[in-house]
Length: 348
Image 1 (cartoon, one colour):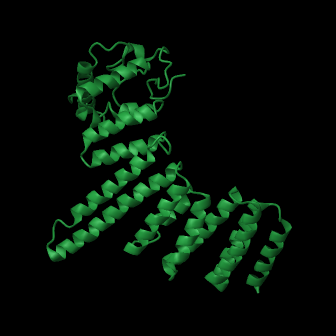
Image 2 (cartoon, one colour; image 1 turned 90 degrees about the vertical axis):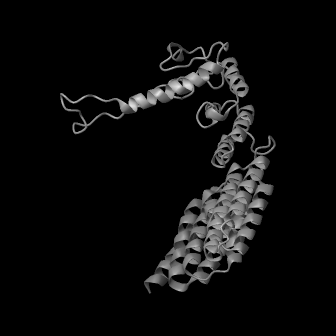
Image 3 (spheres, rainbow, N blue to C red; image 1 turned 135 degrees about the horizontal axis):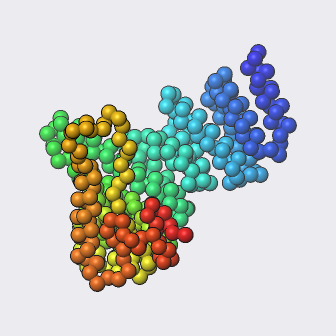
């Protein structure tokens, strides 16, 4: 009796707010959940389909449309985790949702976890390819595709390693990992064209991390040079080449050219010791105990090593500030696109 009264109340409330679509989404979500708990998944799906068609007729692509799809995807994934659900229903729902909202993290996350079988991976890869084709300038779709390839490669490697323990084929997992990294690099190359997402710093950073993890530091250096050509105003990409491991792998000429560009664009660098926490009373040395500065000494040694590497390369390059607490790092002369202050934020 109480369930019937609640359902009737939801219907009456929905009828009273025909033009208030955000409120309709809240009421519909509550009504769908009530129907799911009382009468099952099919009854809840019927209510959702009815309301979805009504919103798509007047509010296609709106926030209310996206919120309603988010609520349904959440319920669908919860149901699929504990009940037998046709995989095609999940795929079709996510394909429809991503077709309208390709950058929605809820839909992309649901797609990543929709299934682990070989058949499911094939359909997921094809669905992501369709999203990228329809929305080539959406960086979230490219990032999700790279993540999917890396996670698929890792899962396949684990499966192959388990099979190797039974069959003594110890090298079975390695080609799969290499294939996953190769597919990821191909995706990033396609994503980072000027006509797609070449101006997205997150993709460039992911590309450099991928090459560094694979032990291809020299390739990562070349990627860093390409990144600052397409994203010259993002200072973090400039600094990637001045930190290990890229700093240690960068050829002398390339490092000299990079620092020359820094000078031309009036980008000023400052290296300083990392901030140290305030010592507690328990950590304070005794009056006659020798005071040690091991963390500071190690940090200073690291800074000195980097300064020595840069100092050799910066010979003859004007207007580049370096060293610990350089005196000219606080001026406002650097008005270039990537001028930075001592805390790493853009200069005013």
